[in-house]
Amino acid sequence: MKRILALLMVPVLAQAATTFDGYEAFYASFPDALFHGDGIQLQPYAMEGDDEMRYGWQGVAAGRRQVLEVRDGVLTINGRVLKRNRIQPFPGEAVSDTDLGMGTVAYFSSGWTCVENTPTSASGSAVRHRVVYLIKRGAKGYEAWKLSSLFAHCTSIRVTGKEVLVQEATYRYVDGQENPVGVNFRVFSLNQGRFVPTDMRRSITFVEPGNVYKFALDK
Image (tube, rainbow, N blue to C red; front, side, top):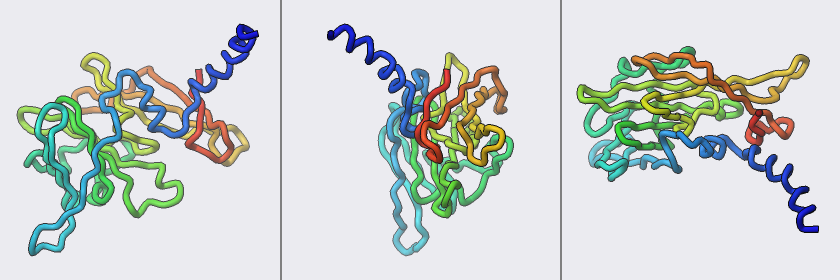
């Protein structure tokens, strides 16, 4: 009897292993993720005699002391200002002074920093888009990229060998249906500062009508 029950449970367990409640849970399943965990939220503060709100954090992460500050939407990392002209946006994205501010979260890995934020002005389906900046520390300064925003997250960034992989998410529709039935992910490699498409793809299918946050990974 126990053997029969165990066999009956196999399809259920297999389905549970490929069904996710949210994109953070999905990305946490990536074995080659560059960043892990919940990240560190920058805290608001103001300087004495200055009413301008800033957001910052300092402490030890990824084996070294880190100091981050966002002021007027501009990010400073360990005393170096990340200039807008040093940020390479994904095609169709644009760098804006409103990208970072309240709610900004930082992630650290050896030689890398990632910050993400959902602008406070976002509402409705716009909250599905998240600003993600990936920053590489070098001897002469920083290289930075702004990633594709739909369902973006720092923990979605992967590394295989010396290759860093990011993704673009696009909705998938069925003819005659107004709402998407899933999402297609296309993987890009960061090569000499550019987003280079690869042959790697994956897709998910929503398991509840109208709920884009519960889905199954397609095989």
